Image (cartoon, rainbow, N blue to C red):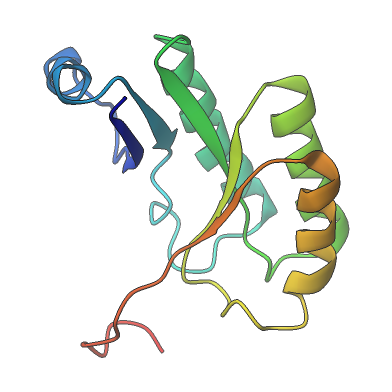
Length: 135
């Protein structure tokens, strides 16, 4: 099975792009445009990003799966509430972090504990830092 972990959907994704992805993979994880609201989105912006993911994954639920985006820089209760809504009620399959906080920041601990309780994978964005784009 070929599974592309995720796509970043920047704005509406055309049927042609989705068809191309589906010819190359048996399924893929979709993630809304995580940079649509800047590098440190607030709670309302995170919700809008996850709404994008939910809508896009729903177009082909047998092959498109949504990842729940969380900004651990927001208050803990809103992060946990968002994860529970998306994973328990809407069937999201993973939690994805971008560049908001590094993985060993103390704010990550209670969020990771909740992810363990929800029994979904957590994926933290990582890269080899080569530019001055983000700290």
